[in-house]
Amino acid sequence: MGEKERRKGRERVIRNIETIEQAIKAEKDVEIGYHHAIEENVLFWIATEEDIIESYSKLLNGTDNKKIKATFTKIIQDSKNHVLMLTEIRKTFSRIASDEQRHAKMLEELKGEVGE
Picture (cartoon, rainbow, N blue to C red):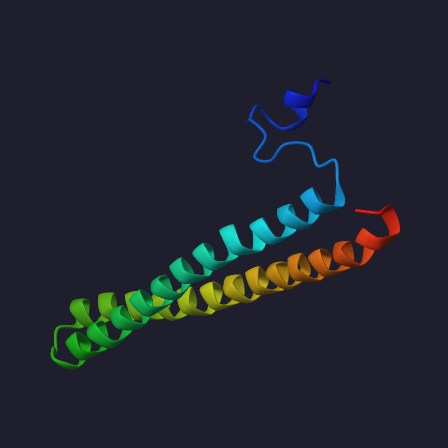
């Protein structure tokens, strides 16, 4: 199986890491380039779901129509579940970012060992 097949047909995102300095940069780039962007988008998504909950709750309280109430109630519950799921996703990404920071520190400590 060739290298490209192992990568499922995608091109490499980073070149081969050949030095400790390159490894440190890769770890820091992953944390900075991906974690912050993903976290910001997840936070906006959570805020959107919370706004939906608030808005639909007001609409729910403003009607006596059973079908409308049932629809808004279901959407509100789904949005509450989305907030919980997105919060877990955010926590998971934060753990990954912490790992990347720890990896960079570990690699920094190795610099003296390899004379870079």
